[in-house]
Image 1 (tube, rainbow, N blue to C red):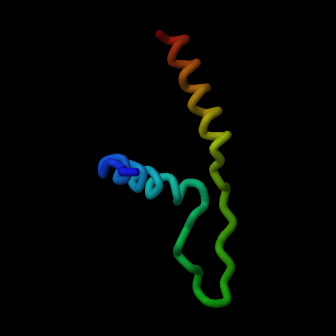
Image 2: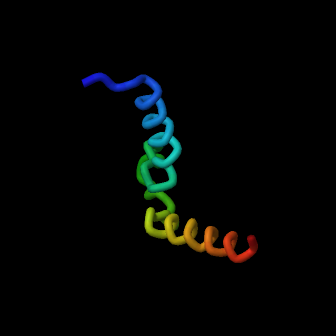
Image 3: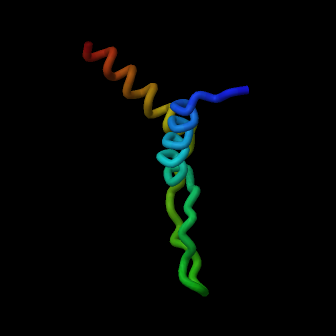
Length: 61
């Protein structure tokens, strides 16, 4: 099975952009410190916001 190079490149770029948003962080905190708590984005929350924005856009147009 052969994969086009552009498809692989697109997948890697999407993965690199989405990883920090969904809590994948390769940076380690200093020794003995716990990472600061933070709100984590979810796919469900993002989809909900996208639907809400689309509805608002359709009401204006």
